[in-house]
Structure formats: structure tokens, C-alpha cells
Image (cartoon, rainbow, N blue to C red):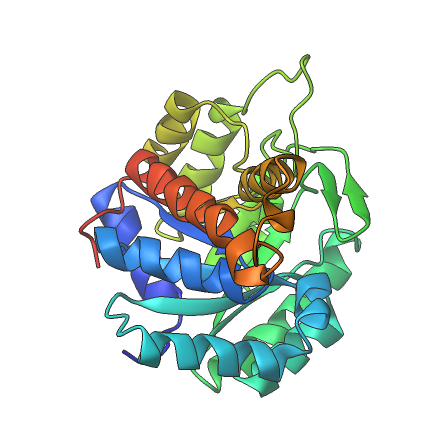
Length: 288
């Protein structure tokens, strides 16, 4: 199945009261595991690529080629989008040129007028090529490729201004953060989410920082218009734990245990298991 843009699957998710997972990829093993998990449970999927991960994997053209090759060779039949996560103004343009089917322009660190101006320009460029656009208002807390936010709560009026730029889905800060949540985290501000959703109407909304949010809270957010949930850190933890277990058990020193295919087998399975667990929470199984 060819790559698709993301807005169509998210509109279906909004109507169906479920969410599509954006699972960030970091290498071949991650991409393959996520695709196999989603194919097994027949869930649409968005493969997220941060600018740092894109550079690590060799560049955006390499990422697109890898994903297309895996879809063909693994006989993946579910809808798949490649999405630039927290893209800069320049990064979004490069991802569009490379063949990404969806991009996020994160202008949340600009003042609102500059955010709106740059968002309009990215929307025009992307939509000319049938590519969907996500934008952000109200900084998401935590750290993403070295950018640290405080977990602000977005202004519904600014959310509407961003939606009026023609974006396809909206990331709005509602107290969520990237990475691990501190013990004193107060939870998602579902009242603000409800107000934003009422303000922006039928535009799907995105929950960043999906790692560590209680399942019930995620599901409550989905009922209020969240149609895309981003997951990355939790899968990294699971992957790293299995690598550590393998090395600490000395498996790499047994026979040909040093073969990377052996070292990464259980970590890759951990990603498959983690993705399937999240899909169950999001409700996207059998929605392909």
C-alpha cells in the first residue's frame, strides 16, 4: 500500500472516537517492529521522525526509502504516513521535498503572529503536494531534541487562529510534557481540552508526550477530540531494558551472540509488544 497523508485517518479517528498512534522511529528495527505490530492488529499508523532522528538515520530521503521498502517487502496493507515531528520552518520544507506525507511545523516558540505567518506558508507549500500539516500552540513541556518547554496550557483563541491558517490537525498544550512525568505532575487539563475542542470544531487534535499518562486519562482525552497520540520515550525505555538484559547476561559472549541481529531481537519484540499495548488503549485496532 502506498504512503498516505495523515489527515484522512485522523478525521476517521475523530468521528469514530479513537486515536491513531504516532510512534517515532529511530532506525530499521524500530520501523520494522512498528509496521509489523500495526499490520498484525490492523491499525493505521503514523511514523514520527524528529529532525534529530532523521539526521541520525542518514537524512529524510533515506527515511522515505527505508519506509517504502519495508512496506513493500513486508506486505504492509494498513495505512502508513511518515510525519515530521516538531519540525522547524526549514526542516518542514526539506521533509516535504523528500516525500514525507505529513509534517509538523512547530512554531510554538515564536510569538503568535510569527507562528501564524510561518504556519500559513508551510500549509500552502504542503497542501500543493497533498501533504497534511500539524501545528502547535502552547509549548509542550519536557525536552524534544534539545528544546525544553514548560508544559503550558494553550489559549483557545490562539488555537482557533492557528486552525484558520488551514492546518489539518492541532497540537495544543494541555499540561502534557515529553519524556517522564514528574511525581508532582497534576495531570492533563481536560477542561481546557474540552474548551479548545469546542472552539476549533471538527479539526482533530494531537496529544504529545503520550508516555506515562494513565490509560484512563488518555481515553478521556480521546473522547474530547484527541485523535493522535504521540509515543516515543516509553518504547525507548523498553528497547534499552532488553539490550541491557542481553549484555548483562553475557549473551553477547556466547557463540555468535555478538551478532546485532541476536542482540536486537528481543528489543525489537519489546517495541512490537509496546505498540500493540498502546493501540489497545487508543482503540485503533481493526480500524485500518
